[in-house]
Image 1: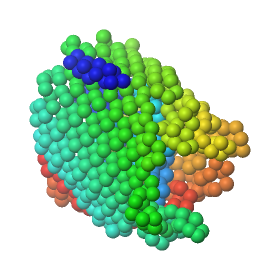
Image 2: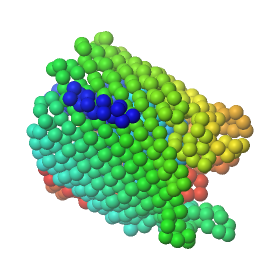
Image 3: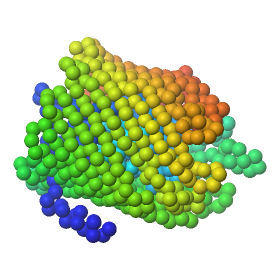
Image 4: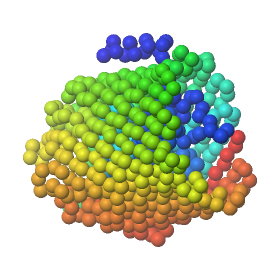
Length: 627
């Protein structure tokens, strides 16, 4: 394996980067249409930057402007208003938060942060906890709905969430905001960037604190949350065709919990708390050859997550520890041999390990993939790819995928895709006390067909997508053997609608609706039952109106249908509707005051049975910008 690493980095002298490959939002060669630089470039669909009209997969893009307009604190709250996505949280801010895409398990969502795979190798299911991902440092988010393991490998069964932190541009810019509100909550963020012809750099810092609510719905003691986080990026052009790219992200979080104290051992107030330290880093080398006809990228990324749980009733030592770490080495190339043809190819290797205080385990996987993007005629794009992953434990696994986008007429785009996804068994599932070393990867086959239509002279866009996914070999805990086994099967099918519009010049509208049928197909008593925490129907509508250069007012209505919280479908989570309103008042070009009221009608609801949720709350803040 050491030889592989040496060979990989020796190739740097001949390497060149694709159009920002899978790790950045915008291709290096700017795409300009009508004298305006496009910012809506999609990377998550194929691993290189593409115009959205050429993408055959279902993708939703959220940019910084919308994050600020919606006054978002926790990114998961914004994700929950997008089509195909459902969110559940264990209590208040900072509680474990799972994001499910098209009915897949939360652990089947792959998460990238500045090109680093951040799913936790030390968690039992290998998922990512969105509870600690706050929005202050985020520039843009791409949500890919549906399997796509050809590009992304393991865990891309339900979809991929690609998060990009704020980056530098030419010139100087400084910005920041601070707000205070209910539950003695304080959220503050700052960003500083400076860019010249050859070097661009950005650094952000954020602080969050709240007294919170009781994690236990029947509790009386508030469970607070605290986080300090920062991120940084430096891009330097060594020559017109060679550059380096460095990125880093750090978050230190503390979340107060509730537990199961004696003598009743039922969920109730306790003094327990958890801490999490997350450190992600990326270093990339990029160059161009053959007059930009060949671009490759060579990079290394590191992810480290340290988690500890404490219960003062048992002393100062942690009652649980989780240490997860992964290193990833990547080479990717893009060849453009002729007009309308791109060949994307690469090799990757990842080492991962975990330690829970009693078990230490490690594994590795080496991957090769190739993908062709063909545009035989104006308005038609076809993409097909193949990938092979060679895992140290279960051996090789191949994935195939294809997609197509066709502009049938002005303002009309038809899309379709077939994708295969897989998820390797986690180190915990393989080697813990309950592990089974012979586990095979979970697999999925995903299909979708969609149409996009521009309306009102291009002022509005409506998208509709039908999807279906069958998952086999899904890993679950076998109560017969008290070990993990490949015993589960699921099937999901549904329809997604997405609306975006800019009306009368100053009215922004965004809406979504999802109908989902997520069914347990495992033989046994629960065959045909609905999967837990998957509402059949969910919808969201958001609108914001700005009065010229003056104040703006907006609101969001989110409606979620009933679901179940146990496999037997006997424990019901009732449906609910949440409304929020927000305002912003600019005071000149550099200063703005803003405020919002969330859960306006003080709705009582639960996304996880037994866990509390936030009632009506209000926040007010100030935003500054200098450039």
